[in-house]
Amino acid sequence: MQNLFVAGTETTSTIVEWAVAELIRHPDMLKRAQEEMDAVVGRDRLVSESDLPRLTFLNAVIKETFRLHPSTPLSLPRMASEECEVAGYRIPKGTELLVNVWGIARDPALWPDPLEFRPARFLPGGTHADVDVKGGDFGLIPFGAGRRICAGLSWGLRVVTVTAATLVHSFDWELPAGQTPDKLNMEEAFSLLLQRAVPLMVHPVPRLLPSAYQIA
Ligand code: HEM
Image (cartoon, rainbow, N blue to C red; front, side, top):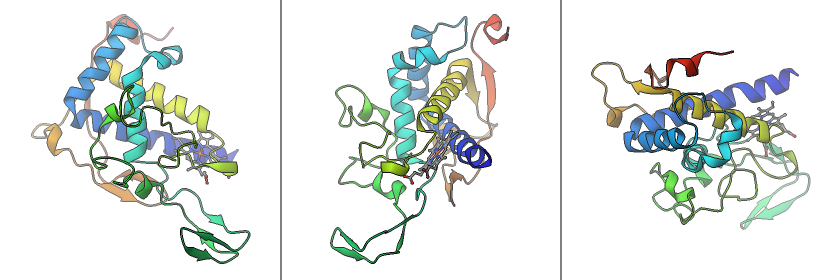
């Protein structure tokens, strides 16, 4: 139970923080995500899980956030049970291996303009329209892949998407006086988790009808 708690809390909150930060840094994309949600959900209620399949742009934003800021940048350690060869390198039996999930998702051979935050690559007609984060596409494996893939993938992905959607739909975001979106600090702090070096400080301004915020 403790393992599930540890594995499932900061991984999800970190990626939501990155998604909101990327949208604040790109006001045109924040506007596009909000307009999509206004069209699908309206402004008289909160977004719900059943809305998610129709939020095409928001889902692309989440994938792009997982690509640039994967919660666990080096995945979890693996040990070679047999000697093997990978890409010409001999891996002795018993070697501990880490997969550089972060590096793979920034490989220019796989991702055009890899350092650009560009959700449109995942939209229909985009360069990576058919790629998802569920372990089938080795260029994007924020939940790992194979037999030991994240046990909470399905739940974690839904929690991340619905939480980010709620924040983006429900509020406009004001930066502290003197800060501008283009200067937002996006430095990463590497450890087991990939967190923001500087926590996101923003002021939420409600944008829905007041009745939408009342929880029954
Ligand atoms: C954004 C959310 C999450 C991310 C990015 C994430 C990422 C990962 C990654 C990369 C691994 C290692 C997979 C591998 O080695 O191939 C993993 C394992 C695991 N995750 Fe998650 N995780 C998330 C949410 C959750 C949640 C919500 C739970 C459960 C409540 C969970 C439970 C686990 C468990 C139990 C493992 C170990 C699986 C095993 O070794 O067989 N995770 N996760």
